[in-house]
Length: 269
Ligand SMILES: [Zn+2]
Image (cartoon, rainbow, N blue to C red):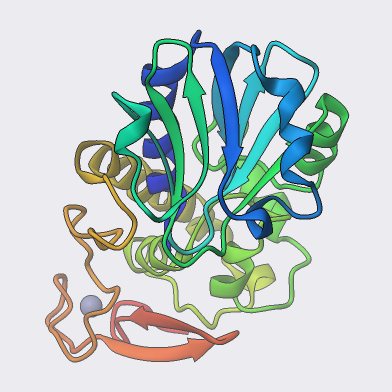
């Protein structure tokens, strides 16, 4: 599943390719992708110009010169990209926007779990208001992280995945950040020692910054690249392999139905 770094890469590439382009027409190939909208609801966007492409957490927004915007969630296998000619689109295309220069912006989604919706500026505001701060923005400080975790009784690992608290830390990067900060994933979030807040904040930013840069270089299609392929993981997915810091075998536990990988020696409760 694309995590924040891959979504960020998709958005940056799409912005470079499609900003300031004008939509000639939109074709919905799979009505389920746009429900509860009808394919005909997209007709008013013909002739609209793409002003910007941006993301908030894993939500992608394509801002249009009309008052409606596209809201895309990639889910498991969704991808957005531009091809030089609309006739080159693959059979897994669920929706496509032919641009006035004959290029095509494609929503490609083999498993068809992704969604493309029409939203207003108010809708976007509402979606954003339900999300925690972006972990790579300057507003996300160690002090804010301390406040966010202060009253949270659940273990730190699932707490980091809660998008209403911090938006955009996925399963791989939560495991990795805790390994870097030497925090046991089962530690109740509210019990993280004050001296560990700064290292945890730094670790979150480090892993996401490196993964985002790596994803921008490497990522092309969901499933063709594990989120961490280029990004060197220390613990994630490495059960039984030696911890890069102390050689103790990495262990796997399941928390809130997600795998967590950690070093039982470096990350003690
Ligand atoms: Zn270790």
